[in-house]
Length: 292
Image 1: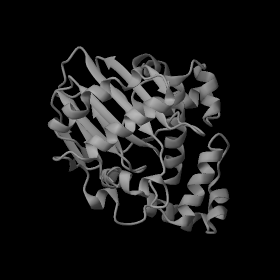
Image 2: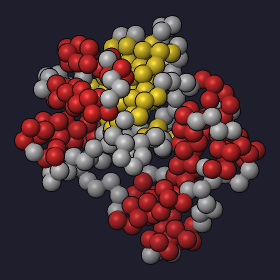
Image 3: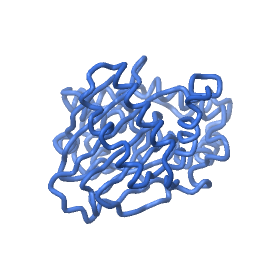
Image 4: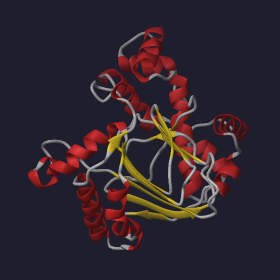
């Protein structure tokens, strides 16, 4: 739980949906969080351990969870699962749920309410899963972006109308009742996100926050729960992990693209954080990728 990867998702610019539909024999993606929302479905996964924030449960044959907090770490681990064919569908989406936007309007209010609740992680009942199952498993076959989005919105709407959903992480752990970050931290995070490939110095980031280096270090740890250096490394490794999975770039090229000064350092940090070499990670984690 100490090594949380901040995943850099493939959604960019005007993209709305990222759909990963795959069959696999094992779960090996590390614990992580990400800025965009995620709906994750697992079929034939009895014995898998699902961790969302401070909630940890062993799932049955079916599992469907919605996570909408950028700070809520989560992972599905192999644990006692013996299934030779696990079906997993991960849908990451980026929509504006502000009161002023479309999802603040009456027809979408139940979806918005559900998304707000899912900042703690929201696990759906078996009846809800079976209700949307045909739409869910057929989503990756919809090639037209407009119709794919309409089908996904139907899934969200139907889930928002079902009974039996329950939150996973506690409110205090998920920090849903208070602002997660101060303006200073948000400003620094935005700068890191845009400059993580560069040599980032504490003094430089402290200046952005308008604080002394020592004071800013304490402030950042207090607000985020992570040291600044750990946050930067997690940001870089998240980017690297996504590049390993979604591109054919060489590991050497990826190491420099994500801000590491040399390949050996990248390999050392990657293995320490994730328990395997970048080449092994790339080999283990393969999937069908669809971006809308």
